[in-house]
Length: 52
Image (cartoon, rainbow, N blue to C red):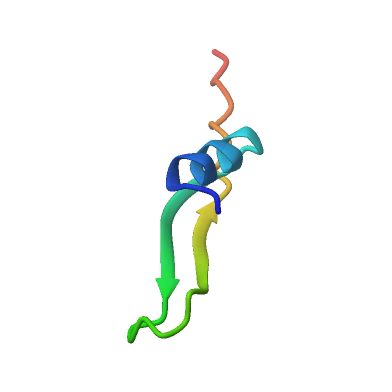
């Protein structure tokens, strides 16, 4: 399982920004499975420089 740090590093390498990473587990603890939910975005490019 990738850690939070590895998720953010991986997304950053691909030009994305991780806004949120949540690990979802069984609230009762009966199931050993988990799911990682990642909310990421591609940052806006910087505005072009003004020429005078």
